[in-house]
Length: 402
Figure 1 (cartoon, rainbow, N blue to C red):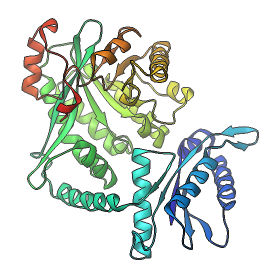
Figure 2 (figure 1 turned 90 degrees about the vertical axis):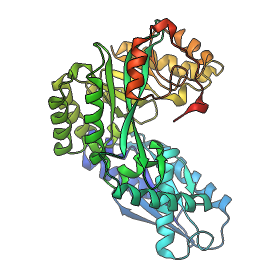
Figure 3 (figure 1 turned 60 degrees about the vertical axis):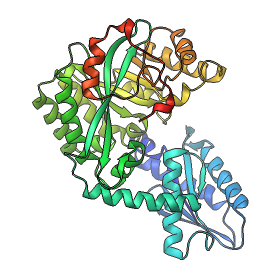
Figure 4 (figure 1 turned 180 degrees about the vertical axis):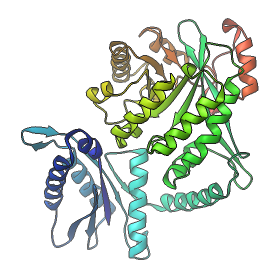
């Protein structure tokens, strides 16, 4: 069985209206039906999700080949009244009886494979495997521990410096969530944050973490800035946005020294709602950073519609940038784009001197990564700021990741 979800469909609705979106869904269905046969059934689950039921004895290789064909079909441009529309699709697949024991489990496993694909490799096919079954169990254990967690005492923030590359001056710290669970020990944010988002708990985490981060940042001298990450859920409702605004207003921290980071993927989930949220934050004086820039589906016209102040270039473009001409050209283009749009630019994930040298050759930009420092405690930020810029020891490696 397969569960297919369209990538970039919601922005089509937001930009062109639901009538265009409905017509696009009809064209999508036509393309999917092109593979329908006595052994392949296609149906719409709802929204922009479709299901495939594949009968017979078919190898994993053949399933993945079919999945690639379907994803390729979805990546081809759709023509609507002479207007080309570009979207994509991610497909999750599971098999019976190799991995699933019954029909309910088959659908759940295909849906989980879709979830993994959307998070880790959108635009491709993900086939549920034994490792996914183990991960599903781990996620379930983590979810239960998260639901039982004391959000005030088990969670805290660490801070990673953001450095001006040419002067080594510290310009900001990014607050990063950490969870020390009495049941599970230290849980990676890469693990618990997606789960918190999926089960609707991320808003409950944001409030105490933002409160603590602002409280700590009050001790930093001006003009050191605080950067804090918001999820799509934090911008999704008036209530959640109002809560964040209230926390900032009551903190005593100068909002003009606060950068709120929103991922490009989060923006594209509901660009109209995110625009409204950004407007509220900008009224306070906050900066707005578009995080993981270059990994989503935004267009330049959509970027112009957002009241951004910074772009944060995703670290996936930085790894090996010094000896990868393609990566270097991409980063060079993104840095130039930020300059053309009069936006600040932060490059994430700098881990070696060679990477730093390559990035510095593009001009003086803000950088962050383990080359300079892993995330550190609040007390360590104070010691960091007291140390002259030219006396700090740099050259950490990815092996010291927290």
